Amino acid sequence: MMLSDESRILAGILLLSLVTVESGGVYLLQIVRGKAGVTPFQEKFARAGHAHAGVLLIVALLCQLYADAADLSGLLDWLARTGAAIAALLMPGGFFLSSMGAGRHHPNRLVVMIPAGAVVLAAGLVSLGVGLLVG
Image (cartoon, one colour):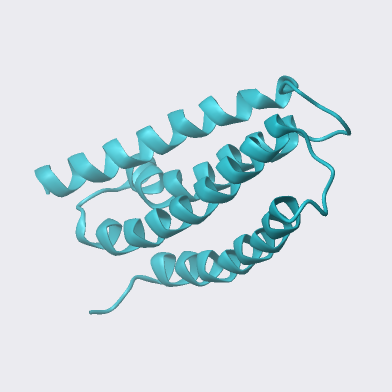
């Protein structure tokens, strides 16, 4: 099976991005071992951000294969190809950035990135799913 240039390039970027998730695992190990002074809230958000990043990058990789099989064009094609990848930036970013700061017990305003990522993810998945069913 041949990938389109769009899928091949984005898949390469996504695979390289998984290395950043791996380095985030090192930070989680520091938290678990008590070497990073964080609050229980910050630990929960670090775990959630790390998990979302890894899962969403894998979903974004899968979407590349299916996007080539779907009969989409224009905005729907773009959403199908990039929705999960954009969500993989927004959602984990929301978890990490909204919990930054010494002694934080509640998220800051950047927590809005999490639901924004969920909306983009849903738009991408719906576009891809409909494209596969209709195409």
